[in-house]
Length: 233
Picture: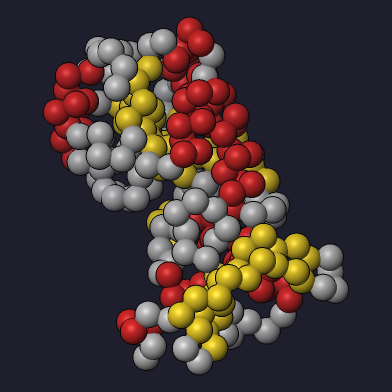
């Protein structure tokens, strides 16, 4: 970990989040500490005492003691208040969206309900990995703008809609009815930390990645694995 205290903290449990930190201007990065998995704890934050905490990806609930005491800003891949909740990328793609807005919002007790500092557009084309790589420079610019200009967050406007967090078993291709739907399911799960789209055949599980679709034909990399006992129901 870098020296502390620092003015800012960037938090992510994913490698693309670390790349956001690396994309910050050198002057800003010198004032910023990056925290990865297992490091984002209240004792550490109290020692750093940052002006802002930027949370790029964190799968579990943020401690109330952290967001009550510090300006904790989370990044959510929807045009809030549309799409509060889990698995935003996957739910957006399955809903037919081709692009979205990345919302930087203040963390509050109610999930994804805090006031919004900034929004920036983001294309949803390609694999999930490609979407996250596209997000890297966008998130870095948003962090820089908030850190330097300190905008006042504005309350969300409109009726909220909600997404349900998807489960690994939701990635099956068993009930897919079109090549386009299969392509979307494969590509939306093709990134670090996501369980691959799959199809079970007897005692085997076929896992798919690297999908390409030309409108008529779908090609993909397929890995065959023996199904675990827990998967054979």
